[in-house]
Image 1: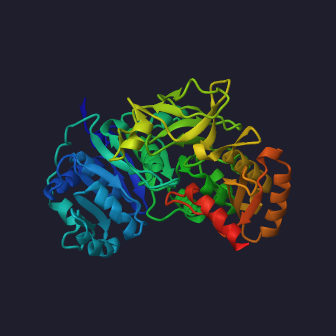
Image 2: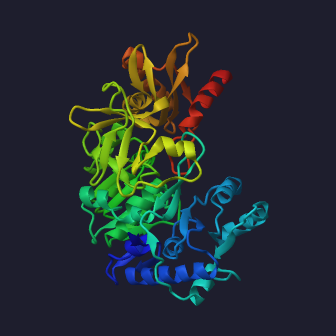
Image 3: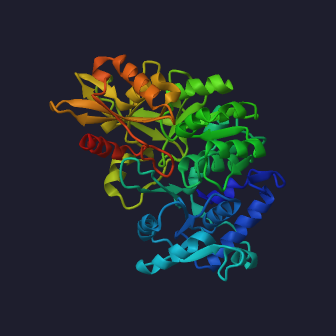
Length: 500
């Protein structure tokens, strides 16, 4: 099948319908189609050939989308990268991807330009500044719009970096076909249509926002709302007041902060039809508090960089997950103990081709169109799934399975608004047995109340789920996408023990 992901994404919207809003700017579908075609012409004139990588390293904006989709339209492979990464962390991405070009805003260009000579194959630096000698806008203004490059449905169109919550990030390679049904969750579960306005608080370098908001919204001919600034509760409220989204996609940490900051109540009256939570497990306490504040509980979704879009979702209080529309699910090891946590395999047109130059991870995760995340799930008799964390989050204590996620949710619910963050990690206790430790951050000014509630909550847990120690910290490490860096927890536990 011959296609082009960028062209397909822009094929549904009515000419004069607004495709994207960002701050004071709006662009309709006709203008976006024309802009992407000219951007593709600019990329070709700059020497980008079919199959070559183009890195987009800038805050979210309409220009970001035009440059990114323009690279795909031209037959290149687009890579969105977190513009908050230090240059030292950007360098390995540049080296591994062997990118032909790097697109950035002018305030980032100086630091990048100084390190490019260190690379064996430095990318061409393209600066998105109207006044620059090599400015992107100058290139686009004089470029000729070109037809979309014809590519195979299974040829690479884009990369997404994994979040790195448990180790070194990997480049996930997605094919042009990934956009065919990128809207299946939003259409089938949220009722997405051209009249909707989608807003994701996460940034476009993150699969959650890219697939479920930008791609799904454009595929449906709807309006996508972007924000140049980093999300805070106050910023989210400002964007919602200004742009009036009907569908909001966010992460549990930010939902919790919006509850604590009183933003949830304001959002309830804004016209948002559905709140969606993903990126990590939604604590039951946050779900219940959000429903109490807004009258609408968030729909909890499960997806990965490798699936691009959400594959599982929960819309009931028990948190059990069902397959999203068009997603096939099967148990990876059907011969294993049915009562034990197991890995799943997921199949959907948005599932990636695989990893870039990671043969061991490729063999472990991908098989003939199926992807198997490293997370574990328990099978319920009704055919739904309970998320149990990753393999190293599932422990056997006193002969019984214990998920660190279950313990975290119970503690978070019991501590309520006195707690800001909580994480549980498996450790080896002094007696040589497997045990649990808690790392927690209290809400501002609530340390005494948080300690009291934590002690009571732990005492109320079954004995095999009770943590042996609790460490109170100022903060917990998060990735650039706002997810907990679980790979750092054991180190933090050890450091806390040494400081006592």
